[in-house]
Image (cartoon, rainbow, N blue to C red; front, side):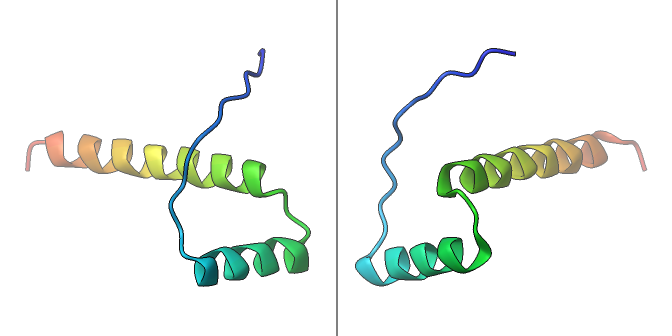
Length: 57
C-alpha cells in the first residue's frame, strides 16, 4: 500500500502540547504514527458501535 503524507492542523494548548511531547519522549513513540493508530482505532470503534445499533433486538 502506498503511503501519502498530509498535513493536519491540531489545536492544543501549550500545556497539552508539553504533556503530549513528554509522553512521546518517555514512551519512545512517533507522534504521527501514534495519532494515526488512535484515529484508526476510533474509526473501528465507531463502526462497531454503528453495527451493533443496527442489529435487531
